[in-house]
Image (tube, rainbow over the protein chains, first blue to last red):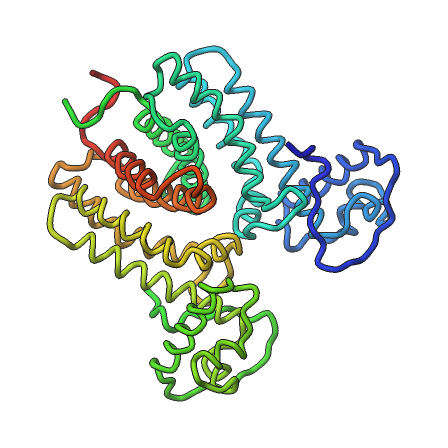
Length: 217
Length: 217
């Protein structure tokens, strides 16, 4: 698996860029944090690199030592978001309790995260995928989440809490519905509360995964 | 609901274009069909407008009477695809049989369609959404499919074939999983056959929608 910090946008042009021999991960993080705070306020399209560096207390020159430009910043932000979201979900998955309880806590963490990062989530989703050094950015991010959830599904199948079945497809079905309904919720907050969406997704995953048969009373 | 033939990309520039007073829908269709056939062969990014007009037996000048450019062609192709797919699903939904049988036939039609239009489907999905005169293109397309499926869900709830519940969320859950797993299948055809994906999606929709409770033997 690629080190997330090394995933880069594939630049359209052939511009060469000054490379740092020893990049400082804290400087990189400061730039990403500043960009994130600005995106929460104004979204990504309006973001200017000068604002990011001003907010981070760094120079524009320093920015270009760490990122190729706005496109590369976009890729790095999606990668950093994916890593942050993964940490929150992993914590839920690795906690105490039965498999379906831990999955529900993962759902909860997911909804917290996308609520907190709403503008970025909607923008990233609407922007489609990009080619990066780790392949398609969307496929990469989804594969990370699937790799985290899959062991929980396998554990549930082993303990009998989850029906025997194609674990890869069950994992995709849970993640796909989570992502779709979370996006639907953000676009329809007037009609559906967070509590409703959470309850719906939690019962959906029970229905999808339960070893109990459906279709008989 | 907007007439699909009038949905246009919102152009980035302010270029003005010669407008036809009486556009000929058959000419427009010929251009879209030619573009579609070319996309099946080579995908969208490589597509050149000269090829489209050559394949359609029309002039480049005629093309620009019907489309603003490649971006507008993209929007029109997504709209035309959505309309074609809708017709196939509607036929299934309006056929004979029980609600869940008709839904399964809709699933089947959906998989047929994306298999036949694989390159376009993958490209449209990876391109993200665009702003059009009908709003976000992706949201528009999804809303069309939801509007078609929703009456079937309502009918099922009325007849007791589908559990009472939030019909809007149930509709989104079915469509969201269909779309996600269909995309996953296209990227993993070596691991999963069409028959496997169809069977998984059909049983998934039964589990999601069945009025029978889950969690008791």
